[in-house]
Length: 258
Image (cartoon, rainbow, N blue to C red; front, side):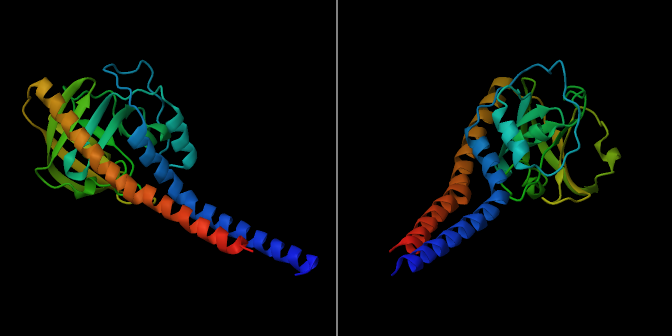
């Protein structure tokens, strides 16, 4: 092969390689935010406080999370959660934050009405529904009557039992009115795309139990859920990345071999 043809050949290989990586990046971008959230869930150490913060962040308009929001939350190690919610039926274990912000919604779930305390008022918790069902509140639509929900809120543990699940509109504010301390409301979008529909789970508080036993039970359930989520994380996120790396290596080898 003469020098001119060799240079043309190298140029063609370079163009093919660039196009391949551009296509790969475009395919990865939508996937990346889910990967960051899942990785954060698996690895981030949650700081939890028993006190309501002196300053609660102003509510923001909540939209689908972007990779910038999620990375911002991942880098924010000082934001303390005020509690934890554990739902064993659907393998949910998420920190509860105060302040309806994009960062908090990407880090976990949020207490929608921070001025309401579960000893005196209904507790309302909102979370994102993302494309991957195993993230945040993506699976609460699978709950049925009788399923258990455990929360720790400002240091006190509570146990609830699901009473109902219904679809409401985002304008049905009366559905979220304070009905007393026996009620817990969970809210998420019907789907991962923009929609006026919301899933509302209503659960009733069970009789008070020994706080130490409830705390131990919650930790046991959290550990079990983490093991299950680690398996899902490996299957849904790490395995595809490994496969893509192998395919990329094979592709580059075939394109650039002599």
